[in-house]
Image (cartoon, rainbow, N blue to C red; front, side, top):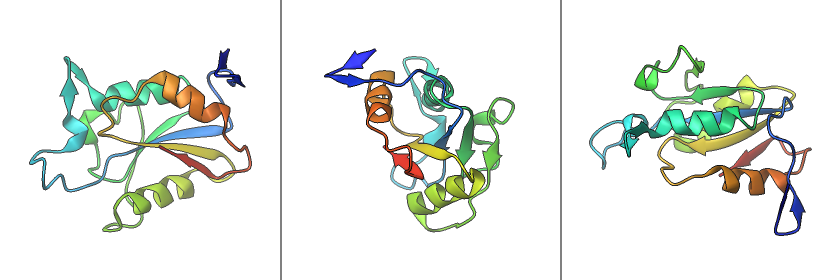
Length: 133
């Protein structure tokens, strides 16, 4: 598959872990971001599905112990660096995945689509520890 002259890698990469950042106090929003539902679909579940199709596994990094009741499908990794915001969540994901790259997205990315992830992964440096969107 090509996108703008870039050859996209095959889907499902075992050298890559997907991580969805589920931390954040949601002070401005008033309710947990990982509970967002758009068009009848929980955004967090949709994001996990997008990452699952492109990585060897998915974790929910930081935040509540079981955001949106999804631990049955994706492991929840407690924030190793509480209070550091997204950077702490990224560090938590990296710590959980030694030896593989990590593709990181935030749980409130309601418009993120697979084509964006495919384009990002097509240009990924395999030596990079993390690709963050």
